[in-house]
Length: 142
Image (tube, rainbow, N blue to C red; front, side, top):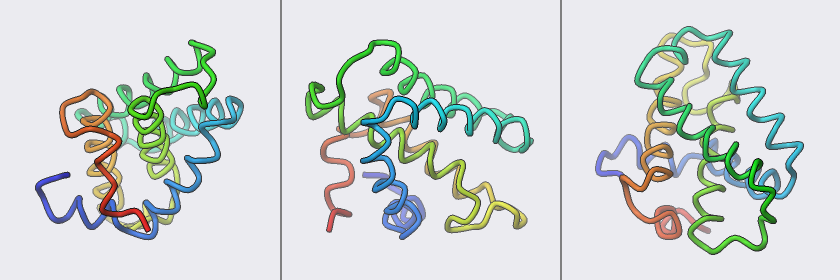
């Protein structure tokens, strides 16, 4: 679990919970995943804050996880628990990035701060730098 309380609150927020629910559906629909990746690219074009490092690198890591899954042609239901949990987390994080009305609406000053925190954490989990994806959100499950 993230050490900092701000990230913990973001992960427990209604916005991220909605993104997790959306991710549950999207991971089984390759076209939806491709659409999400296109939305992430569009966000990078439209929003300068998304193009700045380190956020850009973290987004690239997260997007690479989704791209690798799509390129593998693997069936989501055939993935082991760790891989499926990692993919769901990454998709939820990217979904959080592209929605405008999250904890701090993106059109407000510093509106990308929460997106940065969520994507940073998701990228760290996806790369294995923090926690195990199966356990990471267990305390936030209903």
